[in-house]
Image 1 (cartoon, rainbow, N blue to C red):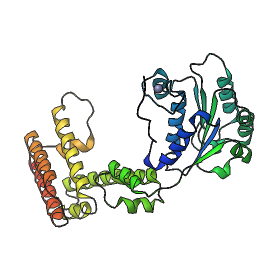
Image 2: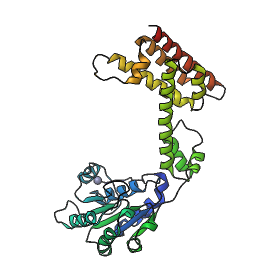
Image 3: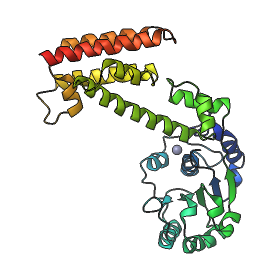
Length: 331
Ligand SMILES: [Zn+2]
């Protein structure tokens, strides 16, 4: 099997580092330190390099076929030639025994391929004894053994460990390709370049913020919808709150909520446990009314959205919803 297309870097802002590894593939140093701030995806990069080292098609050039047994084993985390060392719990140190065990394992015979990889993440979690235990193997790595270290704080590593590895440094990025990547993850969000700048060019951190933000939005929206149902909040108050969120996200979520309510009513007799929120919001509402509301939302989604139309559209979505809820209460 041949591969005409070389694999690309896990993220667009890592292309230069990926090329660097690609060009020196045949003389790749046996100790590599992948260093960069948290939020740059350094861990995934190191994992991809580990996978490439073990892929059966990567002897002469960097390849990840995703099809050989090595690639499958790496994906299933069952490859005996890939030993991942990390703290037992986040924030705890990597102890000397873990390093000794990994080295012992890598020295054993009967391995699957020509290469073996120890991946240490994050390397700065190694305590002094663990670092010292690694030094000898870093100085004289056995044939075919690669030591991949990830690190967010290189200054916390023993200088002797650092100096025995080739450092691959990763940098924050606000390049157009990075903004474009973020846009693909969050198509409904505007001003992503600004957001990326606010997060110091750390794209994964910006994305995590967006996801948490969205979770908070969903939680708050649920609280407000329940309060409206119970008469504890007015439609105007709900609309004011919703105006602080992107309309596309409110619309998408109302669609997903309505669809879940429909599903819950349809499966009402076959499920033991019911979602309390869905039960409260669905009470007394006919399935046909929910279908009609869903269709209405689908139509709204097709309409052009601009600054003028958005508040009107939001009003229509919430008024229609409120009518549905009020009809449910009178049943
Ligand atoms: Zn493969």
